[in-house]
Length: 269
Ligand SMILES: [Zn+2]
Image (cartoon, rainbow, N blue to C red; front, side):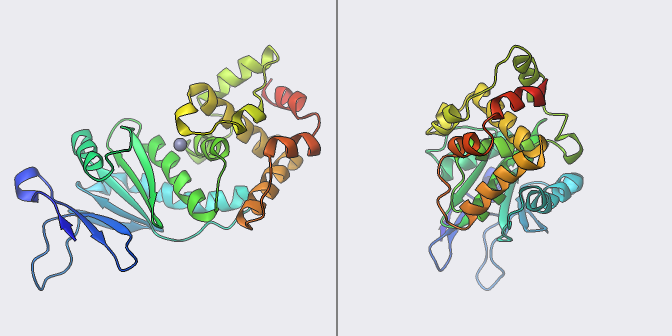
C-alpha cells in the first residue's frame, strides 16, 4: 500500500491499494488508523454496479447517477448483448485542479482529457470533475466502461460511435445529437463517410471531430434505419462477445447490404 500526501495538508489524501491479485484500486481518504476500517473517500456510494468515490457530496447528482445505472439495461436492450455486472468505479472530483493532480500522479502517461475511462488489470474506472458537460462526459465514458467490460474487444470506431450515441439523454438519442445536423447537411450533397476509413483508424489520436461524427452517424444508421441494419450490428457484437473473430465490419456491411451507402444518404436526408 502506498500512502500519499495527507488530506489535512492538501485537502485530500490519495492511496493506491493493491489487492490480492495485484490490481490497483484507487482510494482517497483520511489515512486508515491501525485497527480501524480501511481508508475511504470522503464520500462513497453505490448506484447499480457503479461504486462512486468522490471528494464532494454528489447527492445533487442523484438523477445523473441513476441515469448511468440505467445505461446497462439500455445497452443490453438496444445491442442485444449481455452487459457484465462487474463493479465499475466512478471517481468524481469537485474541481478540475484536484482531478488533474490526481491523474498526473497516478496515470502520468495519460493525456489531459475532460473525463477518462481507464481499465487496469480488470478494474474499470471512470474519472470526471464537475463542469458544464459532466453529464455528457459520464454517459460517454461509462458507455465505454460497460462495453469494454462485456466484450473482449471493441473496434475503435464502433466503441466511439456507440459512446457518442449513448452520451445523449435517452429521450434525445435518436434526434437530439449535435452531430445530426452536420451529417444531414453532408448527406444532402451526397457525402457518406466510408466505414473502411473508420475501420483503418489505428489509435485514439487519429480520432478528430470528423471521425467522432462519422462513427456516430454509422451507429445511428445501424440502430435506426431498419431491422436489417440493426441485425447486422447485433450479429457483429454477438460474435465479438462469443470470441468468434467477426472480421471486417465494412466487408460484412457491403455483403449483407450492398446498397448501404444509398440507404445511409436516404436515412439522413
Ligand atoms: Zn470515447
